[in-house]
Every structure is written in structure tokens, then in C-alpha cells.
Length: 275
Image 1: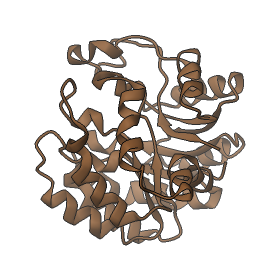
Image 2 (image 1 turned 30 degrees about the vertical axis):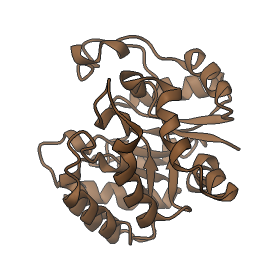
Image 3 (image 1 turned 30 degrees about the horizontal axis):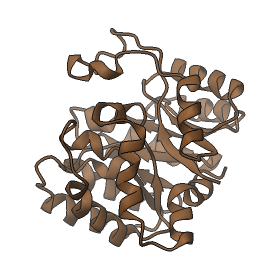
Image 4 (image 1 turned 180 degrees about the vertical axis):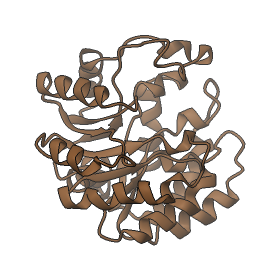
């Protein structure tokens, strides 16, 4: 089964979605399942994993409704306030919805760069394994060290880094990122999504070779069993669209074995998210 392990849906709201500013006019509109379904079919995907784009439990209700109406949405990575006193109560509630497989917080945007190491946040992470929930780590390179401390503190928790932790593909200033990714990848309870590449590059004039160095790093660090392909649709529309962005991975992996490609484009997602 081929799975796109990372994409988003939204009904565009200029106030709620203020982060989609005027530099992103191409995605200042609704993106819903009927828009994605033909794209997935075109590229021979059987399903996708919908990831939260808004930090609210209303977002979970929105995604649950979409998943109930569209069986190609195989899983949801939602949002819950991990720092809340009643976090275990909320996790118990979401455990009754099997399509919700994990949670994410937009750590990359937090002024407190090590928020993930606060006692309250770690208490929330501690509860996830009780309900077999995964955790998506959305960070910038300056936070990889904090994330490594977090991942090591919970060896029985399944973690996954989104978007390779966003290396600066545009500037190719990746030495510190390379060092830190190689270190955190030693944690065997951690996987990585090969996603969001084009949004870290020059949106309108990127080239295949712009991504080679970063891809070399993660394929060497994580190996073929801990990497998951994700389109990051509709964000990829900022830089050429679904097919063009996907071609980066297709070209890079053309020398991998059939099994390795099957793992990257679906097998690893099936296992990580227990689909």
C-alpha cells in the first residue's frame, strides 16, 4: 500500500490562518479531500495521513469528519494541549477514535525554544504511550538538541521528525544540522518524514541537486526502515505542485531496491502509525 504520510486540509480563514501570509497567495484558499483525491490517484497512492494545521481541538473534529466521509484518509495526527492538567482525560477520549494515531504541536513557532523539555510538556508526552499514540516533532534546526533530549527521555515512545527538521536548503548552510541529525538519529524510537523539502528551497527556481546533500544525510542516518515519504500538500503548491515536488524523491531513490522504495512510499508509514 502506498501512503502519503504528511498532508493538510483546511477551509481558509485569513484570521485563524494568519501564518499563510501574502507571500503564500497560492495557498490562500480551501484545500479539501475532493481536491486531493484525484492527485493521490494520479500518483498511485492508496491513502494519506492528515496532519493538524491549527492548534485546537476543533481541528480534530474537522479532520475526524473528513476521515469519516473519505476512506482514503487512513490516519490523523491531531492536536491536544499536552501541558493541560486534564491531558490524560483528553487522550482517553481520543483513544476512542481509532483513526487518530498521534499528535503534534508547532514547536518550531514557540518563543521558548526548549518548551518540549518543560515538566508540563513532558508530562503530556509521558501519557501518549499509554494509549499507543505517536508524536510528530515539528522543529527548526536550532531545536534538534532539545528534541534529542526529549526522545531519549522516553525510549518507549514512538517519535517522528517532520520535514527533516527543516534544514536550510536555500542557503545550503547545513553543517550544524547535519551533525545534530546524525546524533538524534541514533535514537531507535525515532523516525523521520522526508517531506517539506521544496518549501525550504527557492520556491520558483529550485533544482534536483539542491536537495542531494540533505537527502544523503537522512538516508545514511536513518536507513531505509525509518524514513516516510510525505508530500506536505498543499504547501508543496508554493514550489511547483505535488508531482514536481514528488519527483525529487522519485529521482533520488531510483537506485534503491524495490523493497526500500516500497518502505519509503508506504510500508514504513503503515508500521509507524499502525494502520
